[in-house]
Amino acid sequence: MLEPVTDTEKTDATAAPARALTPRHRARTQTVADIIRLGRRHLALHGAAALSLRAVARDLGVVSSAVYRYVESRDELLTLLLIDAFNELGDEVDAAIGAVPVDDHAGRFTALGRAVRTWALREPASYALLFGSPVPGYNAPAERTTVPGTRVIVALIGILESAFRAGRLAVADAVRAEIPTALQADLDTIRAQFGLTVPEELAARGVLVWSALFGAVSFEAFNQYGPDTFSVPAELFDHHLAVLAGVAGLQLRASRDDG
Amino acid sequence: MLEPVTDTEKTDATAAPARALTPRHRARTQTVADIIRLGRRHLALHGAAALSLRAVARDLGVVSSAVYRYVESRDELLTLLLIDAFNELGDEVDAAIGAVPVDDHAGRFTALGRAVRTWALREPASYALLFGSPVPGYNAPAERTTVPGTRVIVALIGILESAFRAGRLAVADAVRAEIPTALQADLDTIRAQFGLTVPEELAARGVLVWSALFGAVSFEAFNQYGPDTFSVPAELFDHHLAVLAGVAGLQLRASRDDG
DNA sequence: TTTGTAGCGAGAGCGGTGCTCTCGCTTTCA
DNA sequence: TGAAAGCGAGAGCACCGCTCTCGCTACAAA
Image (cartoon, rainbow over all chains, first blue to last red; front, side, top):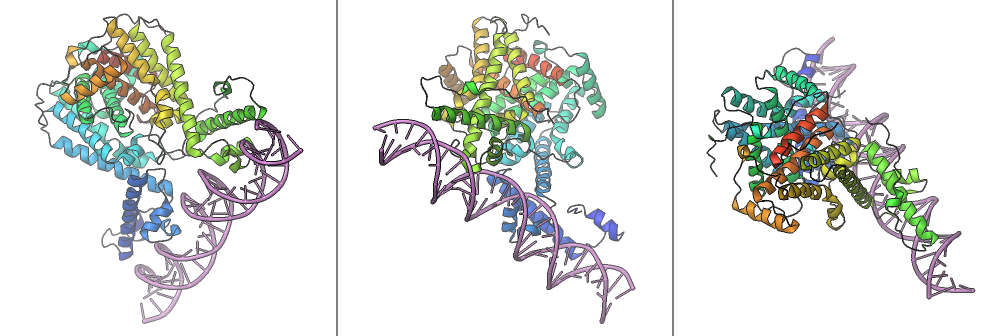
């Protein structure tokens, strides 16, 4: 069928060389890019469920059936936007983390959390697409979305693991909890998968902090707090981040935070 | 996906126990109840975005325009289902809390969390409707949804306040965080609104625990952990609950937990 | 240079959706 | 008893995703 983005496969099918793309090829990728761009705009303006392929076609100045030359279906377009959004979020998180010294683990954690929140509030429809209720009847193809979809948690794991290896990650005694056998086994699997040295207790904390972070962001992005409950929501979020850093076991002393 | 949900006849919940109603009135409320019941089934089976008024009409054995005699619009039906779901969740949470002694605050907190999770995993479409990405173009009328929509947080506040008054709520020093001025004012407003005596620090913790709880539930309900990551997800969730109880400041010693 | 083909856009069309309006019929109520 | 209100059916509008066919055009192999 149609494979809009992977040009390697198409050139392989006809001729081996990966050099000079034909003008038609170039026009095709450009059209796909335009469709994604217009789709992003519709997503941001009217939400995911209102994303209409016909409307994108109208904006593109083309009849609706024409866009099916480039995008297999509406779900395919949704997948493209999903990957696009995942990568944008991942890029911004990586950039935010990169702006903080590697040894300031708490600072990096704060930067990660703030970056997620900032992006979510700037692109609420995209955030809803990624972390809200799944669109019914649509399941994202795992082979294309898992890699970009795991960039935030991979970054978070990197921070926590790095802090642990630097001796700056320790569980607070006040909030210790038991870890039953099955959970221990699951956590061991994860630790092996990522080559982690953090003990199970801290790994479990990391999972909690991960979900709690997105819970806090979702509450803001989805307006769950109710209208006008917090005059400066960023302050509440920063407080949550500070507490969550403690929950994760991060030592806060080195994080001299500038406004 | 899920096994077909057994019909839970909750028609009596909407019937008003007034005196001599005309047969037409009785038939009307019965029809509305049927529409809600069929809407619930469609919601559970196919999700919120696939909820079609025409499909409900077909199931009702009636032409599509006829249901507009009873339900103003599709959004109106969505609102009815929203309130219905909020109340069902609230009922189950209240029942779960009520089964635990009043002085076992940590036990009540655990019961609340487990009740939310159980309901969310049993009714994922309803949970998505309440706590997932908002349906685009649809805003729930606040005057009809705020009261049932706040039952869980009200119950949580009740538990924490009761624990504080019993001297069994104290913030753990290890994870203390600053509370800036604006946030302090917002929290004071909330405390006055609910007649709370808990200090700001604990109130802020309560908000965090609230959003973190729903973050953990959402991660499971929306499958954010990825497939087959945790063999016994309930163990992970219980661990999170235990940590969150500590974060909230609940003293865990009295919570001798039975299976 | 010629020619077959692959890609393309337009258009018609299918079945679905939310929603509106009109038309008769029936129940209710003054 | 008669007016009014409620009701279901049906037609219809504009939109949706998606399919199919029809010519046209650019390209690449012969």
